[in-house]
Each structure stands twice: as structure tokens, then as C-alpha cells.
Length: 478
Ligand code: ADQ
Image 1 (tube, helix red, strand yellow):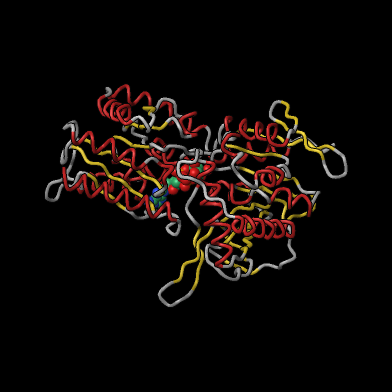
Image 2 (image 1 turned 120 degrees about the vertical axis):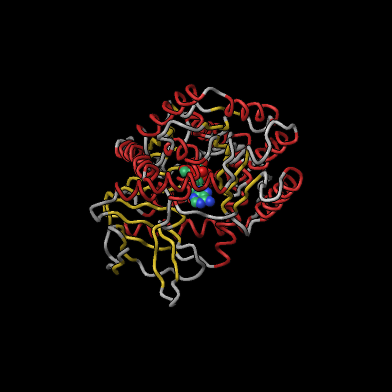
């Protein structure tokens, strides 16, 4: 990746503002620092809408301390925001991951409310808004991402009333009955209402937001818009609607179709002992993903004698995540105790019941695992979208495999030909897993074909284009 220093005074027609930069800092054996593009669909989608050199990205580098100097990489201007250790604790680990994340995911674990965390959240949001305000050209479009930056739209509007502001929420937006718990609920709603367009994963999330505006701020809504009164007495209309995110399906399918990926998938099955049935789970190690419920159902299927190694194996990939937050440390312990118990009770020498990998993998390896899996288990208790489900069907160009998908994911709205489950209902989940294994292969192919078509037609490029078109058409200020 090429990096050139750029003059600080340059401005851009499109500015993306996200918690993290789309690159990670790596240090080689000689101590030289370089930046590597982070994996992920958002980066891919943004790269294609920001080509032409007039796009900038504001985000945190991922390390504490002073921000590195702005630099250009692959046609993108990258502007890092520096965060101190204390700000990371308050804004990111505290308010974002220990207050908002659980609150917005159905309070699966209790959210913790700390006034100091909110102060840090506000300080950091202001820093992001100021950086965006400096980088935006006159009349520019600024696209803010996610729950870590909900105050940015109003802060930015105050600094730069000329720019068009969109915000997209990657996670669910909770019902008013839960959102109302938030001590800073008014500040958050007012922060968001600084935008022209608010994007959500599902229609239900947008509806939850509109209801929150009506019930908690007594604002008027009409269809998918809410009317906001400005300080000067004028009115502004903000639109809140859904844009389900997707993946770079052409890029991923090309990778899956490479002969070396297929060979690697065969090798994975051989390494697993050539079982009849490979079940797979791939998630960040997060309590929203329903990993414990999935393991419980699988352990019971082993206990019932329905499944048994070496004929059936489960591979659970759990990416390390938020390891400094207590709820995540507890989850890791619970998962690892369950895996250990299942292997102790049902495994044999060289033939564990569950292969557990607490690691990250390159995209090539993920694609090979998807190709190797007969049944993909995606069982979140709540998930904004869930890209793993879309990645799995995209890799199955052979129309093979079966997807077990929780009804509490955004993805289930589009992938309704999956084997849909309620992960809270362990008996029901066991039955759905059995159904996914036993259904006639021709029926499974039909289901897979329909789901693949949906992901191919509505990929991440379409998602980004739709959002930006809607933002360009967002109601003009009166
Ligand atoms: P996440 O909660 O991170 O995203 P998800 O949508 O499943 O969840 O995306 C995870 C990504 O990480 C996938 O691309 C997956 O392939 C990858 N990944 C997982 N484990 C990996 C591993 N061990 N090695 C390498 N890659 C791995 C949030 C919301 C989601 C929403 C997305 C996008 O919580 O609901 O779908 O943003 O908006």
C-alpha cells in the first residue's frame, strides 16, 4: 500500500467518519511501521464510491496516544483521530461497548451507565466532528457510521451547516421501552437528528427510532420522516429508513471459486477425519451471537446420540473481541468450559466433538471453511445484520450446504429460505439443526440458489449507492 503525506488544508467532497480507520498499523521485524487495509465489506464498498481522490476517512488508528500524521493510501485520504488511554476506556470500552452495545442488543447483559463514560463519549464525538468539519469541502457529503458516533451529526451541523450529513447504524436500534433507560437519551436523539438521513439495517429499527422521537421528545413524524425545529425557529426534515448492508459478493465468490480454495476445503475435511457432517460456527466472541445456546443444543444432540464424533463434528471459530470488557471475559470462560466438557464427555483420542479456534483467519481460509461446512450455524440472540450468513451462501457456488439462521438477525429478513430458528428454544434449535442435516439435497440446493441470488443482486456496492442516492435526495432544508 502506498502512503504519501498530504497537505493538511485539502478538503473533500465525500468524508466518511467511522470509529476505526480502514487500515491497521503493523510493525515488521526491523521495527518499520506500515499500514495494511483492514478486512471488511465497508472498506471495499467505500473504496469504490470514493475513487477519484476526493474522498477522506476520519477514524481512530486503534492504538492509544497521538494520532499519526494524515496520509493517503490507495486513493483515500486517511485522517486519524488520537485517543488517550482514558478516552479509549470511557468512550470505546465504556459507553460504546458496555452501555450502548448491550442496550441496543435487547439488554442480553445489563448495560452499565457511568456518567464519566458519557463525558468521554461526548469529548471524543466532538473531536471526530471537528476533524470532519475541517476536511469537508463546501457542500460536501459526510457519512457518519455507527453507535460510537451518535452525537457527531448535530455537532457537525453546528460547525458546518452547509454539508449534507448521513448516519448509518450497523447494529439494531432498540424499542423505546429499552432505549428509555439511557440517562442521556435526549442528547443521543438530538445528536442523531443533526443528520439529513438516518440509515438502519431493518425497517423495524427505523420504526423504533421514529417511535423514540415521538414518545420521548414529542416530535412529529410522518411516514419515515421526523420534523425538527431549529434554534432559529425554522424547521428541518430528517428521514429515517432502512438500508440492509451486504457484502462484496462478486469478490468473495471469485475467491471461493479458486482451485486452491476448493483444495483447501477438501484438506480441512480430511484434517477433521473425513466426517459425514461438518457443522460450522464463525463469530466474534460476543454474547449477542448466541454461541452458548448453539453449544448447548449441540451438546444435547451428542448426549441424545443423534450426533457423534467422528461422523459429525462441530468447528467453532470465535474471533477474539473486546477482551478488556468484563462481560466478554466471562463469556470466553463459559464457552471454553462448555467446549472442554463436551470434548471430555463425547470426544475420543484424536477425535474431539468440537474443534474450537479462538483466532482470526485470512479471507481465503474463511472461504475454504465455508465450502467445507455442510451446516452453517448462525444463531445470534440479536444481530443488526450478520454478514457471516451472507458470506456462507456466497461461497456455496456449488449450491451445497445448509444455513441455520436465527430469526433475530437482520439477515433473516432477506435470507428467509434458510432453516430459521429461535436460539432461545433449545429443543426447537435441535430440531432445526436435524432438519438442516436431513432435508433432501435437491431441496437444500433450491433454497441455497434463492438465497445466493438475493445476495448477488443486493451487494455492498448497491447498499452504498442506495444510501448515498437517498442522502443526495434527502429533503432540502426549508
Ligand atoms: P459484527 O458484529 O462484527 O458486525 P458480522 O456481521 O457477522 O458481525 O461480521 C463479522 C465479520 O468478521 C464477517 O465478515 C466475518 O467473516 C469476519 N470474521 C468473523 N470471525 C472471523 C475470524 N475468526 N477470522 C476472520 N474473519 C472473521 C456489525 C454488526 C452486524 C453487521 C455488521 C455490518 O454487529 O450485525 O452485520 O456490523 O454492518
